[in-house]
Length: 320
Ligand SMILES: Cc1cc2nc3c(=O)[nH]c(=O)nc-3n(C[C@H](O)[C@H](O)[C@H](O)COP(=O)(O)OP(=O)(O)OC[C@H]3O[C@@H](n4cnc5c(N)ncnc54)[C@H](O)[C@@H]3O)c2cc1C
Image (cartoon, rainbow, N blue to C red; front, side):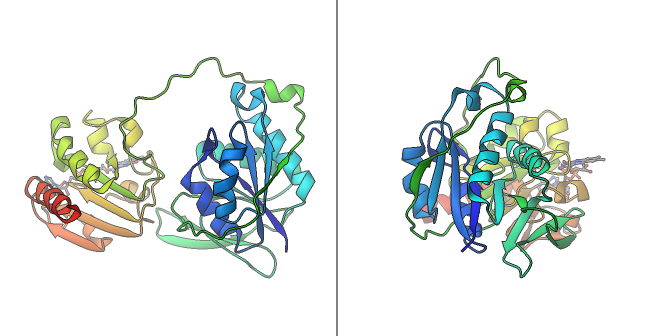
């Protein structure tokens, strides 16, 4: 069976969920071979094996941390040359997409970004993308070279399928161009304790209806009762009620969680562009005519200041 390279997103060997999703999707088109760069390959290998990696190609070098993406492209190219894979899969993060694009240029391949599904096809893997503010789904296939495909987080539920996960060292050499951009400092972001917005399985977002920064506490309380990330509409962000990093939409983050709850958000096309592929959508809005109700699975017509705290209490009660 053909091998499929899967680029591992991790923090010191703690594998992030989108990689488990990639391994699950990779199994539809071949045998996953994970590419682990940086420290922690031995720790990561157990998880990668559990989710179907037949092999883990590991390389650790200071260059991966000290410089921006090019050393990682060098390593992925070395893995590509070692394996001759049927496809290369990466997470659709900003870094994942940059690595993917550079790799595709180097190996002369076509690239598909932001796939939301992947299936085997007679002439190579077929990727689904959600386009035009999610009003269309397209299916595409790379027709030149080895498909390089980035997949959005939450596109598949990770499924365990134990495999060998044998760790093999990957030899990588870095050229002069690899060290063109050096990382000069790192400042860890203050942790909110909530999951990352683009990877969260549940997102609770607030809009102009929240009516003030201080009122976002009720959105956060609902999010915390569900273990969710907090999002915001641009109106809420522009008003200074919530950080720009939490904006969902065309000019913010694109999210695709299992559950998206919108409170006090009207459902403008630019907001929908960032959340319409969510699996289940719930809206709370006091205006029964609000456009968001056109796309919801469940809608509550009501004042969010009454509905959201009741919902939070009910969830807490049911969780015991
Ligand atoms: C180029 C461009 C890019 C953009 N990018 C983005 C983007 O990335 N993300 C984004 O979100 N927007 C984006 N916008 C802005 C977008 O067009 C909308 O203006 C914005 O999404 C509106 O935010 P909102 O739904 O919070 O506010 P509004 O449209 O004002 O809606 C507020 C809603 O809250 C409801 N409400 C009020 N009080 C309550 C209450 N007490 N209880 C319940 N419901 C209540 C109202 O009925 C209303 O439906 C962009 C616009 C442009 C032009």
